[in-house]
Amino acid sequence: MLTFIQKLIRQGTNENFADGHNRRLIYTNIIYITLPLVYTLFVLIDLPNYIKPLDQLAWDQFIFIVEIIICGASLYLNKIGHSKFGRLLFILSWPLLMHIIPIWHQKTPSDYYMAYPVGLIFHALLIHLMFSRRTEAKLFWPLLVLNFVLIVTSIPFLLKYEDRVTPDLLALVDDKYFFMVIILYYLLFSFVIFLLMQAIEHLFIDISKANKVIQEQKEEVTAINEELTQSNNALIQLNEEVSALNQNLEAIVTKRTEELAQKNEQLTEYAFYNAHKLRAPFCRIKGLQQLKAFSTPEEQQYIDSLMQTELEELDRIIREIRGLSPNRCSEEFFGLLRYRACSSRWAFPSSPALLPREKGVASKSRPLMR
Image (cartoon, rainbow, N blue to C red; front, top):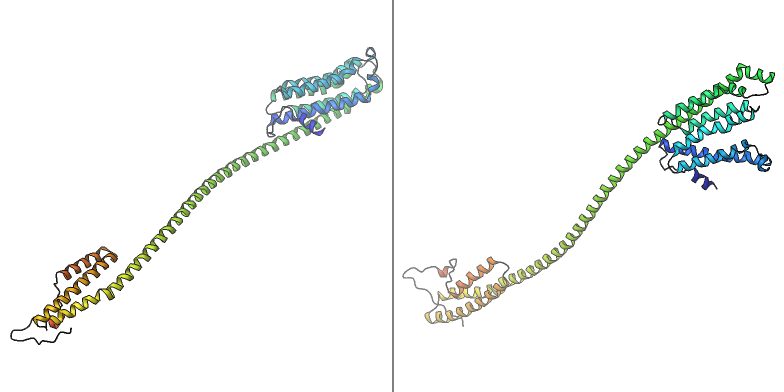
């Protein structure tokens, strides 16, 4: 039931409660819903007078029913977007149906001396609730002036249709305090509802400004989040690139390590050749060269044959080392060394035996070790 009532209250409205027109629609929907409920309660209380035959019913008994129909029609007009026409229909018909016509038709019932002024005060409150002083001033102020005119003329209007004037009634209406009380209560309730509506308006204006600031901050936060998301994506991409580079670097390091190990192995073998295989024939050739200087021609021929053998061995070793050479400089060096060996142009200046002999000095022969 409450859900249904809330749905009726939201007829023709939207979610923007900061909109003044939207709030007026909510106020009028509440009025259109509550007044029919009250009028229906009145009908139920006076139900025995409504279940009589139709020809025995007074026409003013249907005023509540007509007002309920007007509230329903105005509620529908709010729903379809014609709220201004619905509000005017209700605000003008309400005092006419509820007060002026009954006073005219029933010749001023005694209870209307209180009901009529109170009803007009309530009518002023309805005007404040249903129309905006800011955006609907052309309707608000004329309706409020009309209501004030009805209040001021309420006592003369009641007396005009009074057909049984009594001394007590004349004493009541002639009492200046009676009229002053009506005016004071009218001004009191009008002023209170006016200030209350202004406070509500300013409150919603402040809320609207706060919502605008919040929306701007939300947009800024959204923009910052988008920038952070883009930065995060860029960092993720850079991280992937760094990971790929690291993997590639590991492969490069592994490859370079293998190459260095291979080169170290070549250098180790190269050093072995230099320390042992290459130096052995070289030292033998050097020794044979020194022996040749002190040998006879027959021994020199034999030494030459030995030197040729050693040169061939040296040439073979140089060829092997050339295959192990780690760089081009070494290859050129060993190519030069091989050329010198093959051409038999060996000279050892540091050896005294290879220095040129002085004339007249014979060399001493030593037997060749065979």
